[in-house]
Length: 336
Image 1: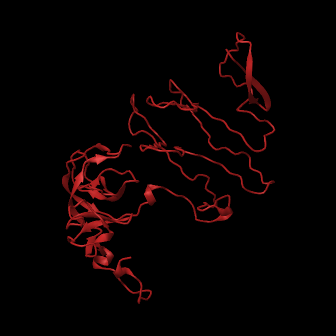
Image 2: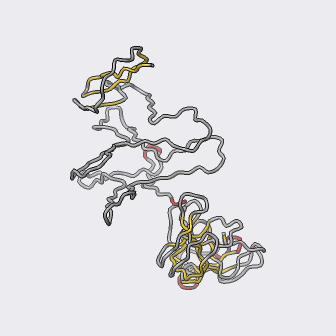
């Protein structure tokens, strides 16, 4: 801990803020993450990152790691900024930044001379402030531009965590429901998106889009873009109407023509490589006590998907149970 911020011999209420009510912080050079320099020490005017959340600009250069350096955590400074944004790749893509666009600082500099850019990948970058001019698109050549530094808090690693921190049932971060049903909120996340202009061919609106990329050599583990889980962990006589991990609804309200209306669209793709041991669009696994009506599919009465029965294959190889309006039917499978 920086010596000037240690509470030894202090009492509650003692002020230790510096210039402009704490806008300027003084720290040992070793606490500063800064652009690469041949001597390894921060230089005057360098953008810096302290820990995971404090950003600023160094007021002075250092010659040893124990030297105290003051930094400005707000203000407007002329700094070098790369015109690039994150796109799921390691280096991002070149893109011009306009006045008011956010700028981020690279968290682990390495040999990087320029740390500021429009790249926002939360695992590698931390919010730094806003550009007050145009930044030319480039991955290597920076633009000298005025930057408004703003030390805004940011979720750890860019992740959102919802919860009260209550430990009911031993689960950290439970989000308690309001006890009064009249006040209870029934949605944790809610959003409504609509195009500002006519949606053109090739354009897309994604209400929810998650991209998880594993670009290192791995020896095991699991990669999952999203997991939804509903858990009933109460007394055995506690009852709810239903448990649904995922509910999909396509509502073509106004009858506009849509070539495809799909409740679920599954694509398995990838470049040639090692053949997967198993590859399937849907994997179903069941455990625990079987239900009274146990089936892979459940259809309302008279549901018709246009299937046509065929009796050209005569050797049965298995069946799939389908719950149709409370009655179990079977899809007969045949081998060729």
